[in-house]
Amino acid sequence: MRPWLILLLVSIYLSNQVEGGSTPIPILKQRFQKLAEKIRLQPPAPKEGDYEVRIWNNQSFQYGDAQTLYVLIKQGNHCDLVKYSLKSGKKRFKSARKIVPHKPLADSLWLQLTQKGILSLPNESDIDRQLHPAQGPAIERSGKMEPDGSFTVYGYSTKRSVWILDGEDYFFEVFYFNGYQIHEYDNPQSYLRAMPEVVELRKVVGILDFVASFFPPSK
Image 1 (cartoon, rainbow, N blue to C red):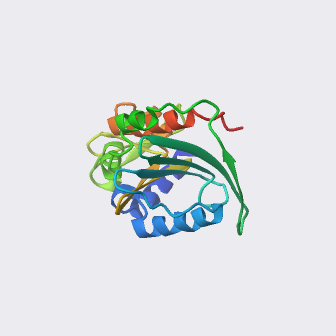
Image 2: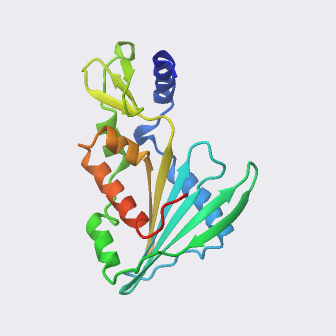
Image 3: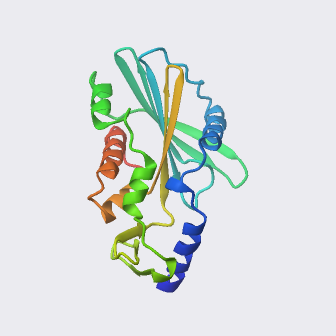
């Protein structure tokens, strides 16, 4: 794709972004609630001190709201982890295949996850401000294609701003006693490769890599 066309797409993207680049929480919650019902997951109802975390992965140019789901359920001193491979057609959801871990789950699994920050996930806006710092007037912007395929925008203040327009999104739903949170992260692995100094991205990718390590690589 030509640099001038990428810059135009970036400008359009910027003009349509809300702060943090995230979809409103009620819309996301409803979207994944409907998908969970199709997978026949039970509505989470954690007791005090218990948690359920659902990590949805949505890939660009694929049908459906998500193609992969990880479910973590912490009850008492036990933590369970499963994965679902999801398939959708152009107009409807098709199927969900449950995948069990290919290595034993340690008794310390939940402790390891909390140490990695599963209950203190970064604020999306904090990451966004580091990836896309204020640049001054839009007419001062220029850009170039990086070797890793990302597109870097340089502005009036010459601060580096990286934009990856397609790829994959991760959504963390955290259910706890009388509470709920959802976090949306766009292309965390790709952004981390482009800007490894962003500590919050390292935290998100560290959790994703740790959870994925319990399952065979996707074909």
